Image (tube, rainbow, N blue to C red; front, side, top):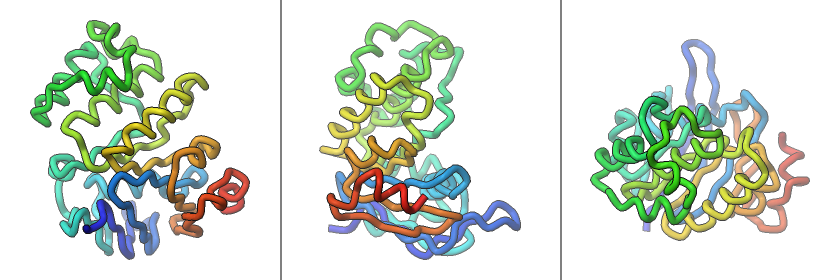
Length: 228
């Protein structure tokens, strides 16, 4: 069975400024993979390139042997690869219900019970405008919207940034549950969270992968910290 995601020799730039150099990684079905690194290391650029928002200079990005390079971001999403950005932006003037309806319209998946099973709080917030949600509630909505259509891969950028510890704990359990059916690539600086859920960790520094950790004994905060 072919891998859910394979990135080879990926080079990406913003104009004349090169950001990623010879990136190579693989993600298998239902695998949790984390990318760690300091701010500006290129982690968000990597996710945006996989998701089709940026076009690489060279290299390949494939999912189940199908190339993603050159595809529009909405085509990548239709292939079952969803991107949850760091900014926690939702449609502020729309209610939670209307935000979910947009996700359902795009995927033809109107089974919100799966969403609310992960995030029961959204049930009580359905008629609230998304602009009035807390950061944690917006993150729940964004992930909930992304899992409509049962994607094969979620690309999640800094999901716990600025969130209360109780929400972080909840997200950790949600990610574990999601990985039963969906592969996850998570960019995250919360190393204890990363090491609790990831089966593989890539450390990125100055646009290059400097370490690939696959041994459970090596996936520890103290080990990851060495490469940052």
